[in-house]
Length: 504
Image (tube, rainbow, N blue to C red):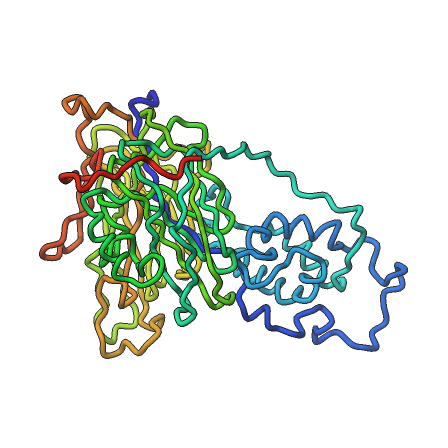
């Protein structure tokens, strides 16, 4: 199947920072010496001058490379974690607590069941590294010799050369009264002509406060609601939660196109060597949603920015993102746990290649799984999260050499469970339905890479991809599952946008 006749389908979701919790930072006796087995009168091991066994792991020789590989994306000075673990002193002080977090699976944060499948860039510390870390702690956390340190080998990344830079109109200081402050900003980027994003990276400003970032291109038809919200809300930007459009829970549907995202450890996106681009329709504006967490650091001015590689040349493959949402979710009053499922068959003219997937739920979610159901009844696990945690949502990209195709007649089945016990309040007398306020929400984001075609020749365009939802009750006035169309609906232009700004 040639690249021009294949459609690549990916389900993606943004992740959360991989950080140890605040409770670890406050433990004054989390060092090895505070162990119940430790004693002030304990005599050192006489097998070496400093009391360390010759074969014991050391920080510089064994543990530092492990920390660099699995923890350095968050636990550095100025990073998203509430404290750093990038020096011997900082790690030795909490070594026992860190060991407990590692062996319990809390750190690095990674929710999928490993028996489902293996993913690219998964945050899993190998058992051998865990054993080394345990041996180091049990040996008394020796420092060792700096000369034995060998940094982990990582492939050199190609330089990211941006063509456009989007910035806030002014810096924003998160609201200290909100532990989780979701804020949307209209960036200083205008696109009077249709362009294609071929690469992106988000540069967080106040890294200790920025939890994650989502960036959308909002279609011209919906800009009035964005501008009204921006004008009505004092200060820079406006409050938002589910997406950039006021009152929306699903990321904006077809009126907002996801073009970039960031969580700690995110690599710049450049299409992985493919001629792929995300369309930004003429007249669109770029809105950046930033989730600030004010529990980990004192609120300070933030100037997170966006870098894009943009071209006016149509790529061979188009990428677009659409949400698939389970809007029929409902938890009866007093029900301790509810399991619900949604099946989405695919009937299309060409196969879709699954590049990866993720899922999103709110506070009442307790477990979630997605399966690929073949037309012949066979099933394949795509992701299984047995213990859902709202704070650790992540992207699950399939391995580069793994090709999972969705054929016409196949289906995706999303199964999720919810528990009233997860609610921050007593829900015994209250029913919960879909929505952000009550904490009941389940959705996936679908990204389709499809052959590009010339907009001036509508008669030559492929037929829109067809989805059919089964087992979902449709709300009055609500649309069915999002239709996949080559371009968001257009409306009469508003005032001219002017020349593109933000070029470097």
